[in-house]
Image 1 (cartoon, rainbow, N blue to C red):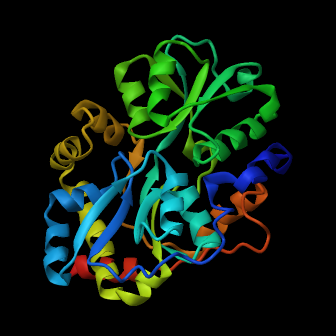
Image 2: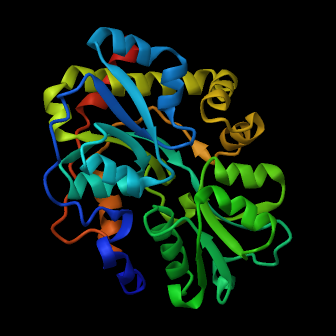
Length: 331
């Protein structure tokens, strides 16, 4: 059923806007002293690594400058990676998997679990996904990982995409649309989910962990991936970057209040919103960051069933950097 509902994903470049970027990268990633790191305005551990001073240490050690290039969602981030404008990126697991399958890139770590929820206005009579038939649903475009999750949720409830009215918008605008009741439901990622919930005008209809539980009972919200030429040219630098992310996750788990304050400064979201995200399990952190074959296979099957990935698409991943990072923080 899901395949039938998602055929439109493969049209015009497919989900995450990566299908059109199947050629080689443009330009060597190691020909510059500036390392461009793709990010999004979300509670990513890399922001904590920066606030901890870990990236400054890496810059001094390797004589490089690390610059964040911020994107609103995964599709343009992958386009930038394909064009050689990024060397490494942190994005939703969907775009990360597609990039590692369709581009000369590898998935290196899993950095956040969960992160996505389908919501309705706080006083909505809707209590199940099947009740969304004929309703208007805000979503952040087919280039986001929220789209296949939404369609799977609909399919699991016996609905087709044609049974609802989809309204494309920015992920950050979903809370406002729900607050104004301009839509009947909306799906987005954190901290936008927590923004809506903490404001008290929305409630969760279904979380991603109920749609696609893959790791420790949760959906995988975020992955870190890099160009293969960058990995080959600067393996020690890549190792230090992944280690900084693992150290940041360890810090988050042990110093939640301080991490919340760091994120507030880094991504300019209200402290109460970020606190809500962590306290309510909207964004979940775990030191089990190494991408394992079983986990990648499960997510790959999801994307192949959705006809986002072709049958012969196989994501490339390298767990060695994450495993070494875990060993280092245990010393």
